[in-house]
Length: 224
Ligand code: CA
Image 1 (tube, rainbow, N blue to C red):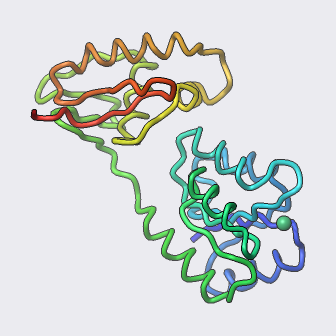
Image 2 (image 1 turned 90 degrees about the horizontal axis):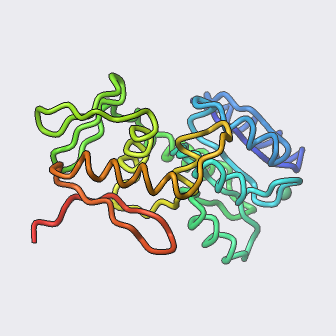
């Protein structure tokens, strides 16, 4: 198991790294948020990230926000200061999976990291909802037996929505997902892709709801 540990307190970081290594984990220690943000852009950067909130440069919240905006589901454990209840809430809302309050017992850290790694079992290569099936390996979309023809960007939009079923995703998240390298896509273009994807999946038993002011949400069509 591979863990990225981001902690600017060198003594604490080394101690925690030794504990995790003692349990058979490979650990990369990073000291600031910018390094973490960069390292976590690699698709297979780690199995779990352990992130301190208070970091030089980009803080832990922002690292998680960017990670989730790229569509990554990498499990994240936040390390928060004692009594900072707001930090815990904000961390979870930003997309962290769990948190530990400093100071904590190291066996608890090991247990949480292991639990998060288990939760992140290998992602299925087939995504399905309603009558829609996306084979992400073959890059093929089918509605029942019929193959539907999607452009590269339409595919990326639909795949991203299927990875976030029944969750609201913002236009910016979709933009980040379809173009990880920063090329320009306007919010209006996203609306166009969404509209085309809706047309092409009209009989797939799904709905892509517009959540006004926020973005979109893919759900199974209601049978009402
Ligand atoms: Ca810190």
